[in-house]
Image (cartoon, rainbow, N blue to C red; front, side, top):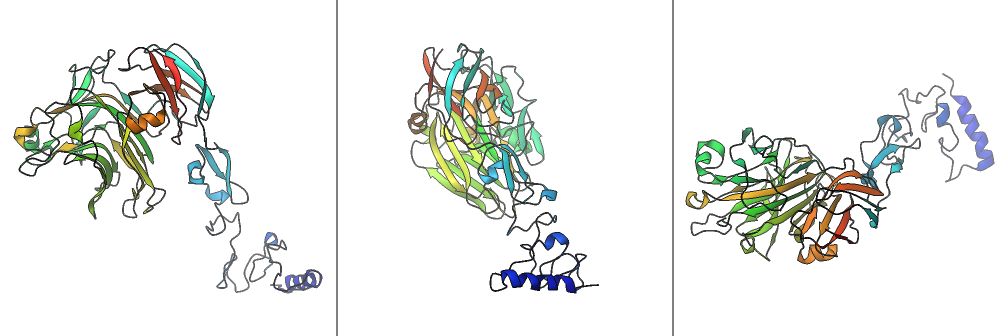
Length: 448
């Protein structure tokens, strides 16, 4: 095999450009395009030591377009495609691709919106009427409607919601009821009851009253927003009793899909609101217990609005996952430094809602229940809300009455939805759009 010409060529070039410390590389001279490697020059692409490609013990430089990703110098390889999303590079939904220069092509991604503006509103705010809004910064939402929305008005509960724990599934704890309807437009609510006799037959833990629920169409996602209206029975048990047994209710729960005990949840535990994570290796880890208004301080004669935002961490072991829990609009607990995935549990989570079990003695348990209305679950935080307060900051700081709307069309500049007045009174209210990055518009005054 002839090997002299490339060396002569390089020597000639050195006479003109110099070959000191800043000697040009083979790539600079265009030799790589001719099939020459950096270390052993070859006319047919073979290295001087007889090995193929451009690798050598001296450390070769990978070439863009060779189908091998060099993470030190390349974002991607065109032939391999891109597994990351637009959010990975700090942008919004869209399609992230790989350019010919092995860098991320973000041209099909949406630039993140720093402001959300409602410009015009078209339609009458009457319950069930269709309304359209025009503005900017609404962001993207792959599916306009939420993944799950259920007001239970059709009376179908057990077919869609059931107890699920491991491989066991039961539906006899759920029923549709007309007890304490939440809104003037409600037809039925859903009820989950406690039943120690059911537990003794193998439904849950011994000497407890247990309930747990999931929708029949769960899927995994890196991000979840869940909302539900809840009314506890007036004898509901929150505090520890004299025997040291306490209420233990998981209001929202995200469970791993690897069959192990890897999950995060919002809990009522010993009369505290808290966030917690569980891994099979290390057990429960309490992230935060809110020592403010206690669960038992709630007025159990009325309905309460619970909302939960969850976002996986950016990589296994990275402490940047997010959990945020609100009651009646007010943010109760929030963390943005949660390790939601580990090397042992790298999978995304299912969501379970309503989710929990109540650990109390038999005499305290039987007859207790929770009522549910308008369960809303989505894999995006993008949503539309109508509230009784003009400022979103005020809602999150001291609370407010907000009703979620059900969008039917969503784009960066326009949204359509069917009006849901819920239990808001007639009169003035304020319309808000929250985009997929959690940025919220100013309140737009409307009238029911």
